[in-house]
Length: 376
Image 1 (cartoon, helix red, strand yellow):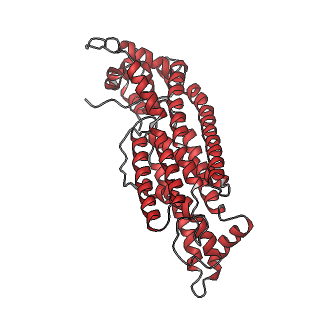
Image 2: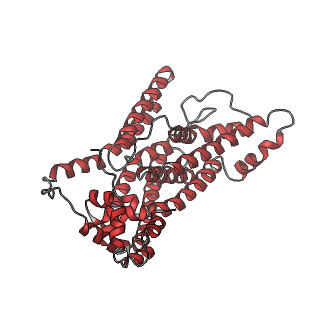
Image 3: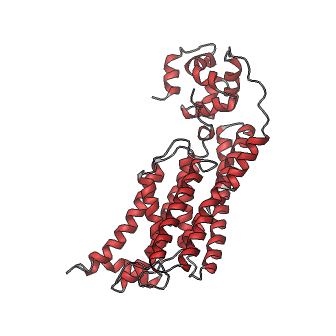
């Protein structure tokens, strides 16, 4: 039974002041809230909607929250005016503009250095590049618009499968193309012309897309806060946020398309637009959900996507065993009639669509956008 049902059973019929009973039940929420918006979001999280707010003689949850906020007694003195915000805003702007740009800059520099080195020096260059990009990405995901509300372990399964998806973008198409023709005959040599070719342009583009992803998350947070203040009901708020989400997601995909086109031309590689857009959309939506505390769905979807790619590759090598030829037929047919990029495009595209549907259901909730209470 949710809070509304419990309140209904605990409040005697004909009670003269149902709002008083609601205030008593949610006193902690009302006393700790800094404005009525936090109360409205908290009531929504406890199952009270615009429709059920009528039981408390209000047209919507926002109106009910305003009365609760006005009724609650606050013994503490009202907080004084906030200090000058010039420095924090400047710092926030620097975080938005500079920190998320580091992974892309370091990744591009590493890819160029990889092209200019040979032999043992190339191995050291690759290792140094991976290390530097990982540190920069870790910093970008821990501060600024891309940081999550709750700390996510670096060794989590979602992080591991994300690494797999990036690694597949770098090496998977080359491995698949070689495997279909009976290879590979050796390990990758770090070039695009080897037996197991390396594809760096999509990875560089995805690393560079951290900057537009951070900008998009920043704009979403700012616009949603304004719409919370102007909305007069939860349904009205949700209806205004969904188009905003889709528009910003489309803008991000447009940025990825421009970046992968530019990096493909820079590194003289074939344009892998569909697969890069599919993976970029998947990772962006997974991060957007994680930012707002929804970690389960991204973890499950990323795991299933990586497992699908891994299983598909495994069938090609398993088909080389006696009597197992048929296992390779589906993937060979797909590769023949499309290209090796069909596998990541279909798997990441389907996963991205599922997460987009989930995102448009979860993020339009008002309670999602109320920041957690700072530790005391």
